[in-house]
Length: 89
Image 1: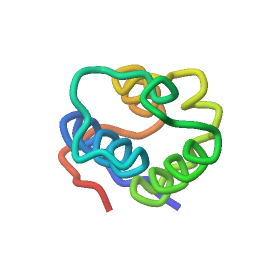
Image 2: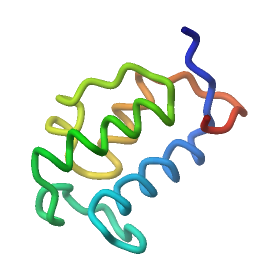
Image 3: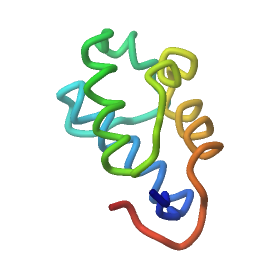
């Protein structure tokens, strides 16, 4: 399966949206730590599952545990998902 290209802006927005949805927030401001903001392992599993589906990429759960801020996770996902002018699935 080919992973669709996604711009840096769209990738960051997608991660922020999933982050907020997972934690039950209206929005994510700043660069919070997922676990300090109320996340736990079950929410991490749910969020990474949605990101896998949305981005069409095989993102390991460990990615969130190793990259706990929005900025860190966006950079880590960027390394696995090609950039381009595409939009999320």
